[in-house]
Length: 203
Image 1 (spheres, rainbow, N blue to C red):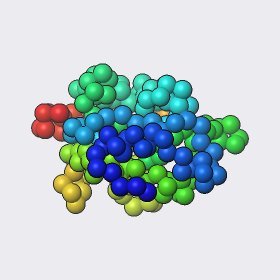
Image 2: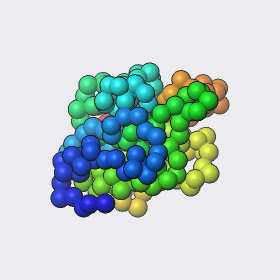
Image 3: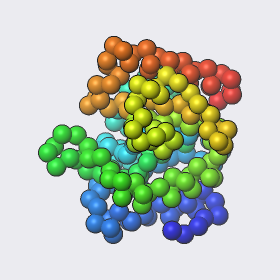
Image 4: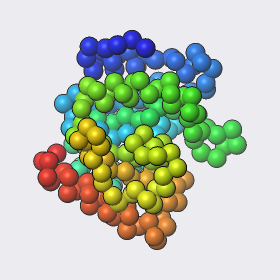
């Protein structure tokens, strides 16, 4: 993959990426991401959904509505969050539906590997102080693969680069995790952690 001098250069090249298509993987949208190098918080999701593929911006569908309800409780309105924070995902394109029709297809490990240099580039140029990890695939970027959501949601940690990591469950309506009584408190702690970090860092 080409090296880049600026985030704008990376984003321009990313918007034209066809690596997965050329490798024979079925994807159904252009790459989707938003934000600038001045962002101090980066939110990393799993992959865009069908709504995001149609709209052309991240977290624009039903899952996004739920996510922004969580963020509003932490002190961000959607407009401000989108303007000041960087929003991206483990893979940048809508991967299409499952073959059995039960929701979105999970990007394969090979697709995630093809897309990883783009995410690494975004992290390098943005250098966020806080990274919000939304969903299992995003959480696995920084935690062991077999980590249970219940073991990390509600906790914060600081990585080797001094960045605060805040995991969240995926807000998809297909996910029952955040509706389980035992997990409600974990989600509440995660939202409180976001609120606390926002105040401490004046985000």
